[in-house]
Amino acid sequence: MKKVIIVGAGISGMTAGIILQNSGFETEIYEKNPVPGGELTGWKRDGVYVDNCIDYLMCSKKGSAMNELWHEIGMLEEGLNMYSKDYFFKYEGHGGEITFWRDKERTKREMLALSPDDKEVIEKFFENVTRAESMIMPIDKPMDKMGPRDFMKLGDFVKNVPAAQKAYKGVSVKDLSDSLKSPVLKSAVMMTHPEKTQAYSFIMSYAMCTSGSGDIPEGGSLAAAQRIANKYKAAGGKLHLNSPVKNVKIEGKLATGVVLEDGTEADADYVICASDANHTFTKLLPSSYMPKKLQKPFADKEHFSVFSKFHAAFLVDGKTSFIPDTTYWESEGLNVWGKEIKDVGVICYDYDPTITPEGKTVLQMKIFQYADDVDKWFELAKDREKYDAKKQEIALAMQALIEKKCPETAGKITILDTWSPVTYATRFNAYRGAYMAFVADKDTKTVTTPGVVKGLKNVFLAGQWLMGSGGLPPATAQGKYAAWRICKKEGVECK
Ligand SMILES: Cc1cc2nc3c(=O)[nH]c(=O)nc-3n(C[C@H](O)[C@H](O)[C@H](O)COP(=O)(O)OP(=O)(O)OC[C@H]3O[C@@H](n4cnc5c(N)ncnc54)[C@H](O)[C@@H]3O)c2cc1C
Image 1 (tube, rainbow, N blue to C red):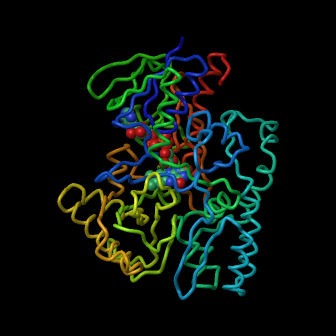
Image 2 (image 1 turned 180 degrees about the vertical axis):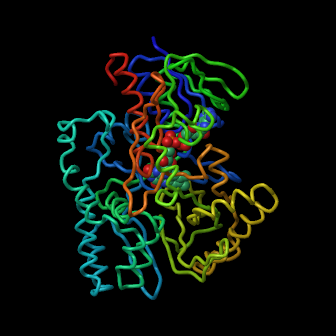
Image 3 (image 1 turned 120 degrees about the horizontal axis):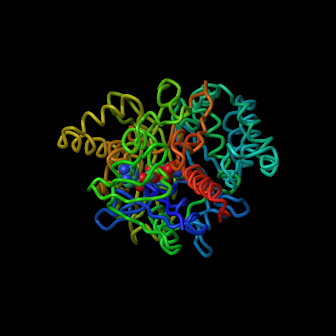
């Protein structure tokens, strides 16, 4: 039985592990953290659960190959309750409000009533939301190994998704906002994605909700990660937690295993690096092995940004008037790093009673952080006291905005936790604290990199950095692709 070592128990590494175990391999996963799941995670503070991932799970609806894969790895399972998203989000401000309902016809009607002058932009938007509903994740085999017949099997995806992408070619989220006349709609379309992101990304995310394929599994992200880890262990996989890998051992054109940070060595026939791409090619492997396609976005920082967020989680003693899920609003403003942020939002976790303490409310407020904002966090984190003070200062300012918006919360809010891009870097070795992969701007295309390492025959890559702007479906698909490549090499069926 051939042995495979996997670096990283994120969703990608664990997916590779489950499929390889089911296909007859012996696998071991080495994970630096005490819990599996990587960025698919959550934790408890003062006994209260704080979620830190799934806002929407693409292909949560039955009927796609990706949905079957969610069941195979344990992300979803029969009988698991799903929170059915009736709306993507709500925005209130500039004297009006708009909700992006699951029922897109309703949203369209409400948008047209709000701003008849935006008819043309609105109609184009909904035409392409409908097209983007055909979005699926190909998972049978790596995309670089797909032939015309494989693409034919993808059905409407092949004609609809490229058409929607083409309709918004060269258009950023900010351009989409600028093309609208209504100040309410202008602000609303800017809320879910960084402004430089291609407008198509926003359309695709909303289409997930309108197609009923972006629901949230009960119990949140940590429970999902635990289910996946349990599937892996039940299939016979060995999961080593608290086991950071220092580097991959190489002899000529072959990897022979890994060396752990504590000096322990483990041998293997194959190695899968399922960690952050920058970490893989600065620490685990010499940087000269980085595939050319990956080098490009790392080098072209102008067109490929990465983003992260500052988050604060709050516990409210009592119930609030916030609707469950996501509400954004025009506030008095928040000043972060000298920049005024007027439109803010919260996620209210009331939608999942299993993670909400009885009679209380858990809220989270997040703000995008990019480029020099991220540098400032890393600089500040060199002085722990100043770093903590800054996090507290922003969290208190956020709390004041929540109290202003919902006066019934005054005096009842406790700050549960605060975290920043530095948290993602420290905890997961994430490049510049990013929790998605590269966000291509409107002038470029997203990059998909085959998970192979030129010059090393038995090392494969997995993880979100290999596909588009990342996220759970690409990370999971890449785990499957890495397993597929090893099965193919060994001439065994990939199960
Ligand atoms: C707040 C937030 C919200 C999100 N919302 C969504 C959403 O709604 N929908 C969606 O699809 N996606 C969402 N994402 C993105 C999603 O979480 C990621 O795309 C996905 O989890 C990445 O998985 P991965 O396996 O590629 O990488 P990771 O999760 O980063 O896994 C890599 C693993 O490798 C480990 N590791 C790193 N270096 C080493 C080493 N040297 N030795 C051993 N182990 C190592 C890390 O600790 C980690 O466990 C969100 C992420 C966050 C943080």
